Length: 287
Image (cartoon, rainbow, N blue to C red; front, side):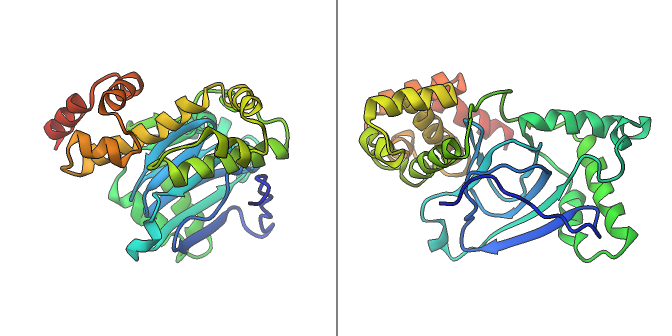
């Protein structure tokens, strides 16, 4: 795995950086950088780790991350076997890309509020098709039209009422690049194995620590126990399966790595506030 600080060299001849990723699965490690990052998941699904939190991501999701916010997209285990390429469009820019006081102007007050909230990580849960189309068409625009298209994207997102804040401040206490590397490797182990038995000993060895030292280290850095983190990953996957499949609760519990359905139900209620059955009933009403 690579060290997680990503240095992005923005071309001084351009106002922002555009990059498209089309690959068997997302391969970027847990990382942070000095730029704002706006991402459209055009095609893919899996888990987004943001700070010490975990959420599902899927086709059409849009995210905005502030500088210095550690994040990583891990595909669902076996994703590449489905023959569907992971596709993401990434736009990176600095806050002063249109001048130091651009975001202080009255005309962009809503956008400024959005930029401020991005320190928590923003998920746009419902977006207009036109917004996604603008992402797709952005790289085909030339000259001033390219900037205009980005501003139209940002304007549509700033007026979107369906946003989720993904973390709280200071959810991750990484003091060094070595800390980032350790957390990255642990997250990767959980993301690739949460549907099976997760071993404390293997997680500790991945972190190159003794088991007791690993438990203390993980709690100190993420403000949660390792078991809590594993359960969050599993329950996020369970929510996805409950929303998108007709599998029974028992089937889903086993598919998410639980051997005991009572324990699965209890953890689901702790994390989501309702039982799996109630969650599925709510989803059915919304359909």
